Image 1 (cartoon, helix red, strand yellow):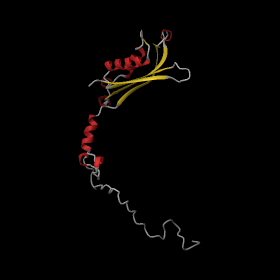
Image 2 (cartoon, one colour):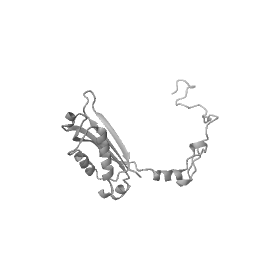
Image 3 (cartoon, helix red, strand yellow):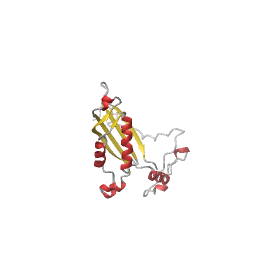
Image 4 (tube, one colour):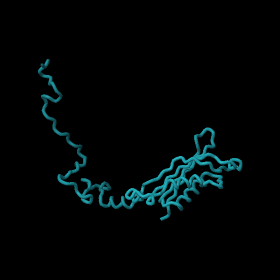
Length: 186
């Protein structure tokens, strides 16, 4: 039972239906969504064609096919002990370094075939990084990172290689790092 007949039991009860809100005077019209099956990508376009907002999806799809691959193999913080340091004394004994490697390539063939021969074998990359410092020394980690990038671009079919070298030499810093990225010449 209602205690007050003028108060409705449920929200909205006893009220006239609300009229839809009017859009602001400068608002763009809402896009019209056609009924029926979806249109082909070339037929789709935004409702508005003002300025640079116009998108032609057929051209966008072509541009996406022409972009370089963004597939990556990442080896994160591979621990090595290399001879690195500006003073001879620092360089005389191996130092612990962490090396991260990122190789960018197109993995479409590997994803399609599931064959190791169609991708970059990260085990080989790992072994190469582990042995890269054997019998060698560098004064600067910048040079070391650059040398590893150059070697990996020669050895593997990556479009781009990034190498980060972390060195633990400063007492009040967790590490010092250098990151080098190079793309294969087209």
